[in-house]
Length: 596
Ligand SMILES: [Zn+2]
Image (cartoon, rainbow, N blue to C red; front, side, top):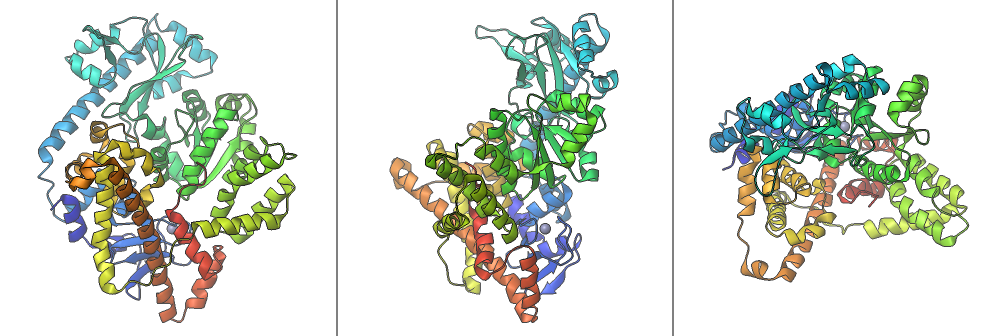
């Protein structure tokens, strides 16, 4: 039995959650005030039979014992597993040996990066060679304190400077390659990756240097380069400045996301400590995961140019999907946050205060690009914005946007409502009869089996990847499967996945990779395609069934207590006004974000 299974069997979710939330019995289940958002009436439920939890309020999220502790303690999967294992008196022995080796290796990489940081920083702050970079930073109004705090650095215009320095510190050439600091030549030998550049050490939430961003000082290209993917650096899950921003984010319950390194430095210098950098135009799902552990209020301050808008829309789709409260700051044309904060701090303050809800931003960027005198453009705009309107829970807000769209495109609101109705019909899942107790128990095991089967297919047959676009992390209820799926989405192959995965999940990964399929699957690509499509469908059905069961359970309880009307009126307050709509709210969670 794997440690993950053992933890799940040994520990009781009700007991664990009780330590964080005052739970009261509600029928077969328990309810309490949600620990993840503030509320007056309990909408947070724990289901002992399924060993799961769900918030029917603002968060709309749920999961198992592992995801609860991850969210509550702001820790990752590995840390959560270790914490719970310790609690349950379970030793993590079977994988201890490879774990240790890998941890030690990574520890060396962190040390190497730290040594490189100090080397580059010394060159910048105290040598003649660093003078041009110092002047550049002074021109950009970066203070000495900021240079010190963020340990900015300068890499000299030489091929082997860092390499020789670190070899002299008894690190090996192989380790320096693994850290991404030097590049191997084809015919043998190696050279420094970063030459004649301003260096930004990138740290994880714990403050360890995972990699570097590097900028040229003149107009040569590429303007920025980064460390490559290593076993400790993954650009898609790092946020520049997160280690220094985390406490301010928690305190203010707001995170502001900017794009560039300079934007972060200037913000922090001007007392905006809750600012982090996405280090690229599009915010990734992994980054959102990291942020959401700190705050659910997210403000994006991204470039107002075209590329920025497209990227922001993608980022926003992720945010919308994750139920975060997200706003967008529209910067004056041609200005970075860096410039705005420096030149006009009052304007920046005002922009933050007046940040626009994501959907208004989507409207603005879609409608500004179409010619409303053309019928084709009109329907294109409707096509792009309709799914977003469909997702809105609150009927008043929904109507607000229906009207807004009608006004902007000079069409009738009734036409949009008809289109919404069509979308609803198209998305409706088949109704299933209420499961019996026994089938519910059986399904628990079956459901996990489908998840595993689906993952094993994807892992063993890379050709199936495009089909997996239909899947989202929500489809995997078991946290271990969800973790493997999310990491797989961002990795190029198995070994890449292996190095990105927490060591506590390797045993599970190997199990999936070695799962044996029947000959029909092994031999025919067509059968595999068919099989996976079928799996995906079942996962989608499973998710909507689960949400339906949980919803039923909450209503059942209130009915037993004669409190159904108060419960319904509470749901109405949240903008859910009928059984059908209630159903839709949960069903839709199984679907794709609204922007492709
Ligand atoms: Zn909640």
